[in-house]
Image (cartoon, rainbow, N blue to C red; front, side):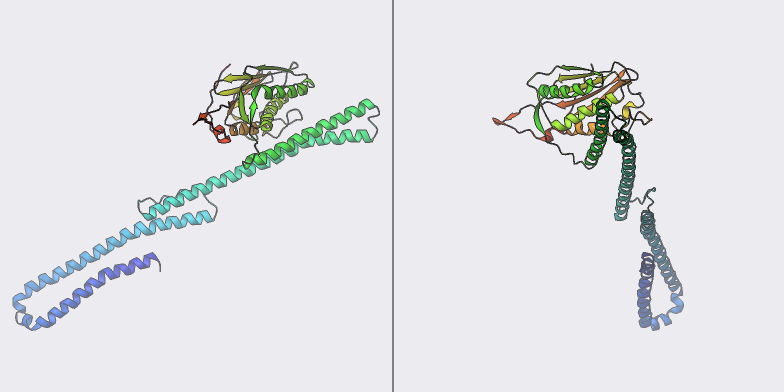
Amino acid sequence: MKIKTKLIISFCIIILVPVALFSLLSGAFYATQIRELTSLAKENSQARQAFDTLVIYVVCILVMTAVLLLLWVYRSIITPIRKLRNAADNIKEGNLDFVIDVGGPDEIGELGNAFESMRRQLKDNAEEKLRDEQESRDLISNIAHDLKTPITAVKGYAEGILDGVANTPEKVDKYVRTIYNKATEMNTLINELTLYSKIDTNRIPYNFAKINVAEYFNDCIEEIGMDLDTKDIRLSYYNFVDHDVEIIADPEQLRRVVGNIVSNSVKYMDKQNGAISFLVKDVGDFVQVEIEDNGRGIASHDLPYVFDRFFRADASRNSATGGSGIGLSIVKKIIQDHGGQIWATSVEGQGTTMTFVIRKYQEVIADETAVNDTEDEYQDAEYTKVEK
């Protein structure tokens, strides 16, 4: 039975029950007193008329009260329920671009607020899903596009070897090295895709350890230097950190951070005398690393977005500047998971500086026992930005 029907029945009961009871009582009263009233009818006719008028007034008041009560209950219950039903129909049809405004401090109002919260959550989830799907499509498109160039090169040089075009040991060696380099490019793209899938689900496998800053970055520079020598890019390294300074970090993932930043600098290097400067500084409770290049720089309107996923300042896609567009977003994610921060400064045409900070390892003595440092200590670290 619908609420509207129930309200109508309630209205009838409110009106009819008092009237019926009043009629029965009046009938019994008149039956027992009819003889006395008959003899005195002429004398009491005016009193009887007044009594009948009073009865009519009482009945009218009951009817008006019931009508007003019915309207109040109807508007306070039926109207919000209709809005909730329409909202449920819209949600069922996939339309989430509306607002549920039930209002009221009662239980129905609370139900309406719960519906509105559910609608907003569903809309946010739907929009996030669409963004994720679009980003996944962009990633697949980027990877597929950037794999074409090295695959074409590998195929071409392999055919050159098979067809005898490389007819000298020097040419064979050159073709094989080119094939190796292109295969390395493809491997890098595939690794980025694999790591991106782990980042998207917060499943990066970290192996945190205590690392000596000076020793670690000395090894990094030695490895990076050999690679940059082959590209005729000068590398400068300055370490201003004491030899006993340590950090808690994942050596492999931190090396990925440095590698991605340097790779990005090389990718956008437009100077014949390319140069990359690597500085490690002590800034209080943090170790600050600055990687500066003299490349073409980043436009001011692009600078706020360089750490966004799939953002590429270079709109043209060629073999020199190709990439998945997630390298710096991976860098930002890893640094943040280490409790640090990263930012970029750049002057278009002059170069770019990538700076990140990681908190130092410090032993804390409590109750004469060294407290074991855990990864959680580095999740919400504050940092001090130091300008050069």
